Image (cartoon, rainbow, N blue to C red; front, top):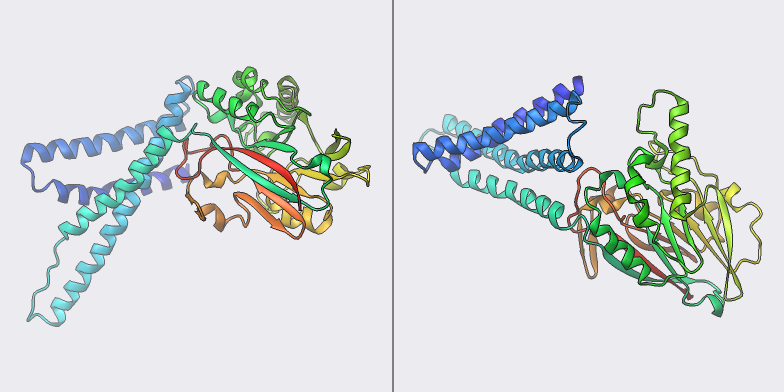
Length: 409
């Protein structure tokens, strides 16, 4: 309850302060236009409060999923967009306070202490930028899949494994989806590659295994010449749900394991598979979620996953959902793993990517957050994710299908 009250107080503050800029902009219009403008502003805010409170009291449980997902997103977008408005107005308050003090000290030249109409307009423009971009990212980019093709250098790779193609997808987060038609495009994009191996690196669901049930018939169409392999992510364990008892949580996990089997995916839970490709051995290893970040679980056991691994493998590929495992676990203890495939970060679903430059807030949290990283002879690839979580869209960082081709270093 205290969190809800705190949130409502923040929203009220943003509403009241941002309204000052809205009112200043409307001042040049007639009384009728101003009344309509004021009414629209507060009516939209009131809708946000009502929708939020209905969610809190669980009165929206039977509402359409799309309405809930996009309704919550619009609350976030509306109030996030008011933050820059308030920041501009606070700067104006500092200007007005400085002028007031200056007038007291030196009253000879009277300085303006009124609210700046220019800064009020600038505040609305600043607030309009996230409002437009986040709305566009939600409407246009949520299912706008992008193909990333990367050559991965592997030390002493035999000629028979040169050009082996691995297609990776990650972070499906099926509980967030409201549409099915675009998902066929992702499946077609993967199958078009005619990959040797297809892998999925965790977070099939948001919280509950049942979220994936409507999409089984779509994703069971994924094809790889040597199979489709998967591993688990932090969201797959149901740790973010208050289950009635441990038995219910375990039943959820059993259903998730069954879903992987129904998809035709070989789920690797601290284990490995030896694939014979062109007469050479490629070891595919998969661990359960293991993170160097305290708030995420360390369920994986890489020692167990590699136990009994033949020493004459020509290439070793690890599926590990969280990329922080690379620096903390893989590199220090398993220098023979040539390539680690991860996801988890989503590239923050927000950033800038242009040739030669990429930026995202994710880089301030994760040292490796998107793309290929190399240290010595070891490689890590971090997939930006196929789905989304929280905000149902993407700005600058598009959902990804990765095509990795093994090359001799």
